[in-house]
Length: 370
Image (cartoon, rainbow, N blue to C red; front, top):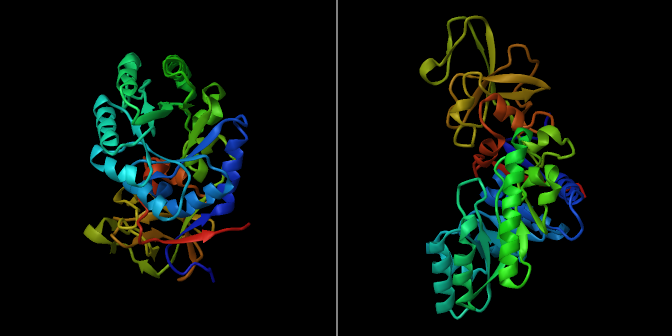
């Protein structure tokens, strides 16, 4: 009988350590590692992940929003935390918890300078985001002088890093575009450093940038999904080990005769004798309806069992007609062998969407093999 008694997300800290050390081995000794732990650590457990990475040597953390950074601070994380997309309404809380903002527009820069000045802050650390081709957020290449004008007029803030984001570093067909982004960022950072009179931290590489573009390592790199062993990087770099495994159990087995239907809206109708298993995980747990009607699968006793009919809020039903199994047997939604990237790709999406959708009600179990 499996030790799994309910739907559980297992988080393997030994795999996390392996991935961190592996990615660190790809950069020079002086290059800092920024670990991205946004979105609950890509659907896992941001606090557990951050505390472990802090212990093994992460230099910086990054989250998307201020609320995520506050959770880490309240859990005792003391490593610097960069907030990638802070909203101005949360600037006071950001300062209260000693978080560091990525400022990406003149509005956010001016507002942050205003509030730090009112609070009599001196040299509060800020990060300046430049857009080099992703065209999402960031100052333009021609904004350097205007950014410097704002910063030179105050001692309330100090630029500690310059950052940008590669748009397609995992796609070898877009190499020319990526090289263009890197060269553009080099020009920006050289000009900024010259005008600042010191060399701030410079970072542009994500995980696939670490693996594919050593010329873009600068003096810090960012890695998120690579730490968790999922994403496009895992397709061509098998050294990365999945940190999280989502498992469940068979609650009940049914036998359908030809003509009988299954689930809401009778979305599946048996044309032959069909044996099905009901599993306690549904769209409220992160298995969206797009995985229904044989567009998604789980693994039972090393065999694929395709999802039949519509995904329910709390349950899915899968085809086990040709699988020897019984109630209480373990079900793998994803793990090292049947990874999230593979399942997501089969269903027409990406692993990030599957991982970050995992509901808080799914039990988290920390496995530390050290």
